Length: 331
Figure 1 (cartoon, rainbow, N blue to C red):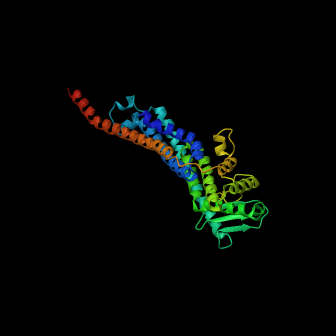
Figure 2: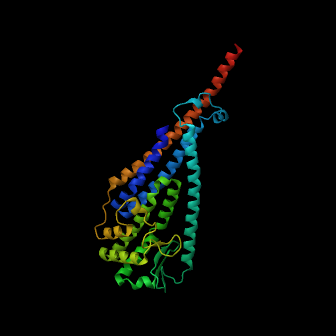
Figure 3: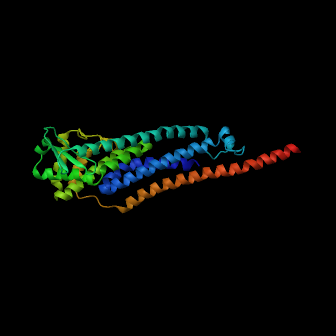
């Protein structure tokens, strides 16, 4: 019972520690999908594990045993979580679930606001140029999504670098990178142990757009120059656009670099990655990560079945115990 409750939480810690290496070693598109799906799975399994711990411990409480018509031996079982464990699990669950709903609401609101902004932009094409000396470039989600770039940004880039920048922002829109980040934000709110995944997915979506831009213009070195110049000129992780806008500089300030210690920040690592060949597929690494997530789900399922079996068994034993006591009293 204890292992069933705690193992998914330990796996969440493993997933958090693996987020940085996976984001660097896998192709960015694969890493984005993998980290987002694993984050969602581990967030759900972590919440379920807390529920199993809370319920398993609650069954040992005398009032719960009476209300559930359980046998008298349930409060004295030694194989279930104790009252303290159940209380802690319930408190954490009570904090994380509302946080996840609040985050989901904010993400939906931000995406809808960005889509409204995209619809209100002038012009019929997918690119809107702002007559503004400030250095700005970002992508807005929507149907269709739009790309906003300032004249200040265009002024610092060559023609080829402009094409690379626009290809980068178009990749954000076509790849629906806003949704990956939104899902990861909700998952990390539901399971704070997964917090490094948020920065990792921000990094992989930028790398995904970088690789798409390099493929579109056919020049990795020029794309690296464009990304480096644009990010340095912006001077911050995102521009001044709506909350859901994806700027060329990233999106979650320093999240990956803090997790990885003294390593360079996201933009230098993105530039360095563009100056090398794209990372190989590594299907074995992907399958290993998926297998670990599956173990978390199966463990929670096993824990839930154990709690249900205890409930059924002790509920069935209660009438027999009551009947035996009644016979003894008659004699």
